[in-house]
Structure formats: structure tokens, C-alpha cells
Image (cartoon, rainbow, N blue to C red):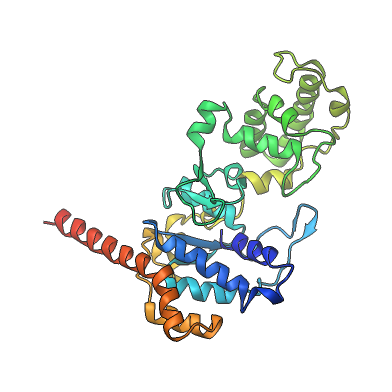
Length: 334
């Protein structure tokens, strides 16, 4: 998710920006991309698009592009990484890419991608660049080890609050929401939302809320560990919000249209990507050196030393991977 990278580096230099050297945000992004260059992955950077939600966590989302977006995308191209702008939220787009088998995993600091239905999420390593220490979450492991389906995760989000509704049901935290999800009310709710008309769904929710209140006040199977009558009484007749359900279950992505995968290929190619084959390009060392000189003031022997320490190994790795891929392709066509 390219958009989260931009916000993260800006937060890091919110204080003492003057003492951090020339273009510290962009320089941090450079080092992060260099660390990506040194591992054998094809990275696709997806950015939030024009149809992303206007409000998240009770805050207005800025409609204008991030001030670093253009120059960061220029740097991505010089590094040889694929990039494109999603029609809506980048997290939802990336989750859809995993479900359609176009990418293997979503690398992010935010596991909201799981709620959007991502099949595999990798938490960005801390400290950055240490890719031998990452947390990996797959839908299969979550289902088998934790007993939670995608529908359960959506229910937990709308009960306890998320990006779209911070305080959905007062005093209903993650623990209570997790207990409620074990009654499989999420499966029933989302099946109805996906199959019924709007009028039918409104009628359905009347009975569904009764079941939800009954679970909270009686805990018939003991999943909650105790009863929560105050939480049950705080559920309004407008719950759940259909707009919030729509954002979680049917978010705006490139796959929202009927042409599906072909739209992804067209979008990525038109925005400078390499189609849905997701193959990275060889970095341009000459253009990287020029970029660093213009934006960081690196020149001469100092520039050579920094390039040797950061990007040469990755450039050689990409070259070797390209040769290996070419050999396999030739052998498969003999």
C-alpha cells in the first residue's frame, strides 16, 4: 500500500525536520525501496484512488494527492517496481488481487486487508528492512487456528468499530465482538446482505438484531463468558449500517466491473505497470544516480559509496533472476 508509506514517513519527521538533512522523507523511502530490491520479490505498489471513502475514523480524508506521491512514483519507476492507482482504497484493491491470484500476499502495516478478504497478509517488519522477521497471516490459518471466517472478521469490525465507524456499538470491544462472532451471526448477516433486496434486508435485520441482543443477554453457549445487557440495550434499530457493510463486503476495486482481471492488466499497463503478470523491471542505475544527485545532493565518490551499499546488490540479484526466468521460459518452450 503505497499511500501508507507516504503517511508513515511524514509522521516520522513531524518533529526535528530541519535537522534531518535534505529531503528526509524521500530519502527514507529510497532506503526502503533499496531493501526491497535486495530480496527476490516482484513488488506492486498500489495507491488510493478517487473513490476512496471521504471519512475514516471520524476524520475527513484529504481529496488532493499527497505532496510526495508524484516524486515517490517517479522513484518507483527508476527502481523498476510496478505501480498503479486503485479506483478506491489501496487495501481493498490489494485484497482483491490476492483473491484473484494475481499477487501472493499483501505487505502492510495495517491488517485491515484481512477484513477486505485478503488471502495472505504480511506485516511490514520492524525495524524496516528485516524481512527475515515478519508476521504472516493467511485466511486458512485464521480459519483453522482461530476458527474465524471472513464473515466473522467483518462482524467483529462492525460491532467493535473500525475505519468507517469508530464506535459502532458503545462498550462493545474486540473481546465481546469475538465472542459474538462464534455464534456465526456474521455468516447469516452477510449472506442476507449479498442476496436480498434492500427492503428484504431491512426486514431481515429486525429479526437479526433480536438474535444479537439475545446472544448478548443470555450467552447460551458460553462463548462470551458472561452476559452484557447494557451492550444489548445500546444497539439501535439502525444497526447495522448498510453503507458500512457495503464498504467491507463490496468495496470499490478494479474487479467491481465485469471485465475483472483484464481491467487490472489494462489499468497497470496504462499507468506504467507491466500488466497483471507483475514482473518487475531492472532498475536503471544511471537514472538512480541522477535522481539521488538531484534530490539528496549525492555526488562523486560519496554517491558511488552509497549506491554500492544500497542498490548494487539488488540490481545484480534482479539481473540474475531475469536470466533464471529466461532460461526456464526457453526450456518450457522446447
